[in-house]
Length: 215
Image (cartoon, rainbow, N blue to C red):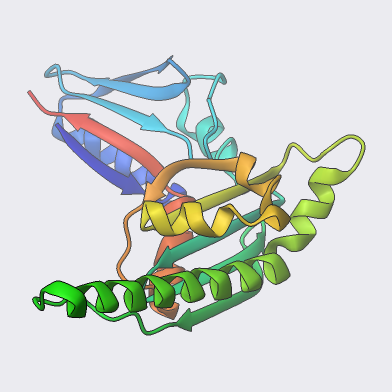
Protein backbone atom coordinates (compact mmCIF):
# COMPACT_ATOMS: atom_id res chain seq x y z
CA UNK A 1 0.00 0.00 0.00
CA UNK A 2 1.30 3.44 -0.95
CA UNK A 3 0.13 6.81 0.38
CA UNK A 4 0.77 10.05 -1.46
CA UNK A 5 -0.55 13.55 -2.01
CA UNK A 6 -1.83 14.47 -5.46
CA UNK A 7 -2.49 18.16 -6.30
CA UNK A 8 -5.99 18.60 -7.71
CA UNK A 9 -4.51 20.18 -10.85
CA UNK A 10 -2.80 16.85 -11.60
CA UNK A 11 -5.63 14.54 -10.57
CA UNK A 12 -7.17 14.00 -14.03
CA UNK A 13 -3.80 12.97 -15.48
CA UNK A 14 -3.05 10.84 -12.43
CA UNK A 15 -6.27 8.83 -12.84
CA UNK A 16 -5.61 8.45 -16.57
CA UNK A 17 -2.13 7.11 -15.83
CA UNK A 18 -3.55 4.71 -13.24
CA UNK A 19 -5.96 3.32 -15.84
CA UNK A 20 -3.17 2.99 -18.41
CA UNK A 21 -0.95 1.08 -15.99
CA UNK A 22 -3.64 -1.24 -14.64
CA UNK A 23 -5.76 -2.24 -17.59
CA UNK A 24 -8.42 0.44 -17.34
CA UNK A 25 -10.33 1.55 -14.26
CA UNK A 26 -13.86 1.97 -12.96
CA UNK A 27 -14.73 4.74 -10.54
CA UNK A 28 -17.02 4.71 -7.53
CA UNK A 29 -17.75 6.79 -4.44
CA UNK A 30 -17.04 4.94 -1.21
CA UNK A 31 -17.06 6.21 2.37
CA UNK A 32 -16.80 9.86 1.35
CA UNK A 33 -13.96 9.29 -1.10
CA UNK A 34 -13.44 8.71 -4.82
CA UNK A 35 -12.27 5.15 -5.41
CA UNK A 36 -10.95 3.38 -8.46
CA UNK A 37 -10.61 -0.27 -9.42
CA UNK A 38 -8.10 -1.25 -12.08
CA UNK A 39 -8.56 -4.08 -14.54
CA UNK A 40 -5.82 -6.01 -12.77
CA UNK A 41 -7.43 -5.61 -9.33
CA UNK A 42 -5.30 -2.66 -8.18
CA UNK A 43 -7.19 0.06 -6.32
CA UNK A 44 -6.94 3.66 -5.26
CA UNK A 45 -8.89 5.75 -2.78
CA UNK A 46 -8.70 9.54 -2.99
CA UNK A 47 -9.87 11.58 -0.02
CA UNK A 48 -10.65 15.26 -0.54
CA UNK A 49 -8.64 17.90 1.33
CA UNK A 50 -9.77 20.10 4.21
CA UNK A 51 -11.47 17.29 6.12
CA UNK A 52 -14.27 17.05 3.59
CA UNK A 53 -16.39 14.06 2.64
CA UNK A 54 -17.30 13.52 -1.00
CA UNK A 55 -20.78 12.32 -1.98
CA UNK A 56 -20.98 13.46 -5.60
CA UNK A 57 -20.83 11.63 -8.90
CA UNK A 58 -18.13 8.99 -9.52
CA UNK A 59 -16.30 11.28 -11.93
CA UNK A 60 -12.92 12.97 -11.64
CA UNK A 61 -14.17 16.37 -12.83
CA UNK A 62 -16.91 16.46 -10.19
CA UNK A 63 -14.47 15.36 -7.52
CA UNK A 64 -11.99 18.10 -8.45
CA UNK A 65 -14.75 20.71 -8.19
CA UNK A 66 -15.50 19.47 -4.66
CA UNK A 67 -11.85 19.97 -3.68
CA UNK A 68 -11.65 23.74 -4.18
CA UNK A 69 -10.12 25.53 -1.17
CA UNK A 70 -12.45 27.12 1.40
CA UNK A 71 -13.23 30.82 1.29
CA UNK A 72 -11.41 31.32 4.59
CA UNK A 73 -8.71 29.00 5.87
CA UNK A 74 -5.43 29.10 7.65
CA UNK A 75 -2.19 27.18 8.05
CA UNK A 76 -0.41 27.01 11.40
CA UNK A 77 2.97 25.28 11.63
CA UNK A 78 4.85 25.28 14.93
CA UNK A 79 8.00 23.59 16.18
CA UNK A 80 10.42 24.60 18.91
CA UNK A 81 12.67 26.08 16.26
CA UNK A 82 10.07 28.39 14.77
CA UNK A 83 6.61 28.94 13.36
CA UNK A 84 4.86 29.76 10.10
CA UNK A 85 1.33 31.11 9.78
CA UNK A 86 -0.82 32.02 6.80
CA UNK A 87 -4.41 33.13 6.26
CA UNK A 88 -5.87 32.40 2.86
CA UNK A 89 -8.92 33.21 0.79
CA UNK A 90 -9.27 30.31 -1.61
CA UNK A 91 -5.91 30.04 -3.40
CA UNK A 92 -4.78 33.51 -2.37
CA UNK A 93 -2.52 34.17 0.62
CA UNK A 94 -3.97 37.16 2.46
CA UNK A 95 -1.27 37.46 5.12
CA UNK A 96 1.57 35.33 6.43
CA UNK A 97 4.40 35.34 8.92
CA UNK A 98 7.44 33.11 9.42
CA UNK A 99 9.59 33.38 12.51
CA UNK A 100 12.44 31.56 14.20
CA UNK A 101 13.11 31.22 17.92
CA UNK A 102 16.18 29.75 19.57
CA UNK A 103 15.47 26.80 21.86
CA UNK A 104 18.53 24.96 23.13
CA UNK A 105 18.95 21.29 22.39
CA UNK A 106 19.31 18.56 24.96
CA UNK A 107 22.39 18.23 27.15
CA UNK A 108 24.28 15.24 28.53
CA UNK A 109 25.08 17.06 31.77
CA UNK A 110 23.65 15.58 34.94
CA UNK A 111 22.49 16.68 38.39
CA UNK A 112 21.59 20.29 39.07
CA UNK A 113 23.18 21.46 35.81
CA UNK A 114 20.80 19.26 33.87
CA UNK A 115 17.82 20.55 35.84
CA UNK A 116 18.80 24.18 35.26
CA UNK A 117 19.30 23.46 31.59
CA UNK A 118 15.89 21.76 31.34
CA UNK A 119 14.18 24.74 33.02
CA UNK A 120 15.92 27.16 30.68
CA UNK A 121 14.94 25.06 27.69
CA UNK A 122 11.30 24.86 28.84
CA UNK A 123 11.20 28.63 29.33
CA UNK A 124 12.60 29.20 25.86
CA UNK A 125 10.01 26.85 24.35
CA UNK A 126 7.20 28.59 26.27
CA UNK A 127 8.34 32.00 25.03
CA UNK A 128 8.55 30.66 21.48
CA UNK A 129 4.99 29.32 21.67
CA UNK A 130 3.72 32.58 23.16
CA UNK A 131 5.32 34.49 20.29
CA UNK A 132 3.73 32.12 17.78
CA UNK A 133 0.34 32.50 19.47
CA UNK A 134 0.60 36.29 19.32
CA UNK A 135 1.20 36.24 15.59
CA UNK A 136 -1.52 33.61 15.12
CA UNK A 137 -4.02 35.89 16.87
CA UNK A 138 -3.04 38.80 14.66
CA UNK A 139 -3.16 36.87 11.38
CA UNK A 140 -5.94 34.38 12.07
CA UNK A 141 -7.97 36.57 14.44
CA UNK A 142 -10.44 37.63 11.70
CA UNK A 143 -11.49 33.96 11.46
CA UNK A 144 -12.33 34.01 15.17
CA UNK A 145 -14.60 37.00 14.53
CA UNK A 146 -16.39 35.12 11.75
CA UNK A 147 -16.91 32.14 14.04
CA UNK A 148 -18.33 34.38 16.79
CA UNK A 149 -21.05 35.72 14.51
CA UNK A 150 -24.60 34.62 15.19
CA UNK A 151 -24.69 32.16 12.29
CA UNK A 152 -21.04 31.19 12.51
CA UNK A 153 -19.14 30.46 9.31
CA UNK A 154 -19.07 26.86 8.12
CA UNK A 155 -16.34 27.59 5.60
CA UNK A 156 -13.52 28.34 8.04
CA UNK A 157 -10.90 25.64 8.58
CA UNK A 158 -7.39 25.44 10.01
CA UNK A 159 -4.63 23.10 8.83
CA UNK A 160 -1.87 22.46 11.36
CA UNK A 161 1.54 20.82 11.33
CA UNK A 162 4.98 20.61 12.88
CA UNK A 163 4.99 19.29 16.42
CA UNK A 164 1.77 18.15 18.12
CA UNK A 165 2.71 19.49 21.58
CA UNK A 166 3.74 22.83 20.09
CA UNK A 167 0.46 23.18 18.19
CA UNK A 168 -1.53 22.32 21.31
CA UNK A 169 0.39 24.95 23.28
CA UNK A 170 -0.37 27.66 20.72
CA UNK A 171 -4.03 26.75 20.28
CA UNK A 172 -4.48 26.74 24.06
CA UNK A 173 -4.51 30.55 23.81
CA UNK A 174 -8.09 31.61 24.63
CA UNK A 175 -8.03 34.10 21.77
CA UNK A 176 -7.89 31.11 19.38
CA UNK A 177 -10.50 29.05 21.24
CA UNK A 178 -13.06 28.84 18.43
CA UNK A 179 -10.54 28.42 15.65
CA UNK A 180 -9.06 25.45 17.51
CA UNK A 181 -12.38 23.63 16.95
CA UNK A 182 -11.96 23.96 13.16
CA UNK A 183 -8.70 22.01 12.82
CA UNK A 184 -8.91 19.44 10.00
CA UNK A 185 -6.82 16.46 8.97
CA UNK A 186 -4.22 15.68 7.94
CA UNK A 187 -1.64 16.97 10.42
CA UNK A 188 1.36 17.98 8.33
CA UNK A 189 4.77 16.61 9.30
CA UNK A 190 7.18 19.44 8.51
CA UNK A 191 10.71 20.46 9.58
CA UNK A 192 11.43 23.77 11.32
CA UNK A 193 9.17 26.19 9.42
CA UNK A 194 10.70 28.44 6.81
CA UNK A 195 9.06 30.29 3.91
CA UNK A 196 9.58 27.37 1.55
CA UNK A 197 8.17 24.97 4.16
CA UNK A 198 5.06 27.12 4.52
CA UNK A 199 4.55 27.24 0.76
CA UNK A 200 4.91 23.46 0.56
CA UNK A 201 2.47 22.99 3.44
CA UNK A 202 -0.14 25.16 1.70
CA UNK A 203 0.19 23.02 -1.43
CA UNK A 204 -0.02 19.78 0.57
CA UNK A 205 -3.07 21.00 2.50
CA UNK A 206 -5.01 21.41 -0.74
CA UNK A 207 -3.95 18.07 -2.25
CA UNK A 208 -5.92 14.84 -2.47
CA UNK A 209 -4.81 12.15 -0.01
CA UNK A 210 -4.38 9.09 -2.19
CA UNK A 211 -3.97 5.50 -1.04
CA UNK A 212 -2.95 2.99 -3.71
CA UNK A 213 -2.86 -0.81 -3.48
CA UNK A 214 -1.13 -2.51 -6.41
CA UNK A 215 -1.75 -6.16 -7.11
